[in-house]
Image 1 (cartoon, rainbow, N blue to C red):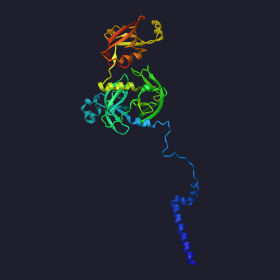
Image 2: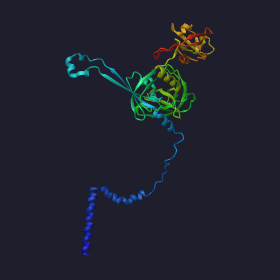
Image 3: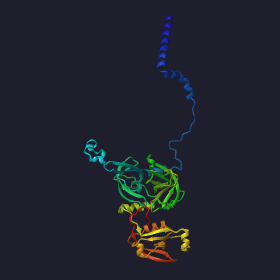
Image 4: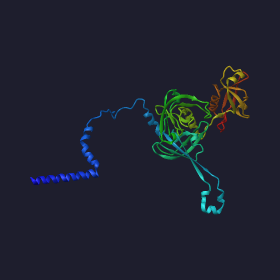
Length: 391
C-alpha cells in the first residue's frame, strides 16, 4: 500500500512539473487545453447561412460577356519623346571635359505618356487618337494577354483626331465593328481603356446623344456623347455595345477637374472606318476642298439678307484662284446645297465637301441677291491645315 502511495505521489509530482513548464514556456498550450471544452461548446452552435450553388447563373443585367469579348482587343499605348538640350558652354573647355565628360553635353529628356488603342485587324492594325501618339519618337503597345511590342505609325488624321499604328504580332484579337446607325439615345454602352494608368478598366453608361458637333474639339465632328466614365488614359479606347461590338473610339471629355463628369465623347465607327481605310491604303486621308471661308447664319444675318429659311451657310470669303473662285462663287453668296444635298450649317457644309472626290465635278446651289443659281466646279484636294483654320 505504501508503495502504491509513493508511486501516486511521484506521478502527481511529475505531472505538476510538466504543467509548470508548459504554463511557463507555452501558456497558449495550457489555455488551449483548458478551453477545449468551452470552445467545443461555442462552435457546436451552427450559424445558418445560405450560399448560391456553384452553377448559379449571373444576373440578367450583367455585361460580362460583352466585356470578355471586347477587352482582349483594347491595348495600352506607351509613348516616349526625346528632346535634346543645347550644349553646355563649359564643354568647350578641355579641363571641364576631362573631368565631367559627356555629362555636360547634349542631355536627352524622355517624356512618357499613356493612352489606349483598339485592335481592328488580325494583321496588327490598331486605332487610337492622334493626340496619343502625336510627335512620339517611340510607341510601345501592351496587350491584355501580357505581350508587349514596339509599334510603327502608319498615318494620322489630326482633323478627326484619329491615328493608325501597326504591330508585328501573331493572333491579334481584332474587335468586331458595330452599327452606329442602329444605336439610339438610351442604349447601354461600355467604355474600355486604361484610365490614369491603373490598368484596363470597364465602365458603363448610356448613349446620351448622337451627332454632337460645334464643340470645337475637331474640324470634323459627329460625336457620340455618353455618360460612361471616360478619364485621362481612356483616349483611344473602345466604346462598345452590349454585344461587345465597337461603336466608337473614346476621344474627349468635358471636365473642369480633369476627371469624368459624365460627359464624354467618342468618334463613331462610321467615321473611324472611313479614316482607317484611307490611312491604311494611302497613308493619309484625302478630302474635298473648294477654298472658301464659311459662316453660320445667325438670326440677325437672316434678317439682314431677308432670308425666309435660316439654313445654309454664308460664304464670307473666297480664296483667289481656288475651285470656288474659278467657278464664280462670290463673298456674300449663301451656299444652299452640295450635289443636291441640302446644307444646314457650316459643319454640315464641311462634311459634305470633305466627302467629295478631288478632281471630280460638283454642283453647288447658291443664293445670290435672293436669286438661286447653280455653279459647277472642279473639287480640289483639302490641304493640310492647322486646327484653327476652316474650309
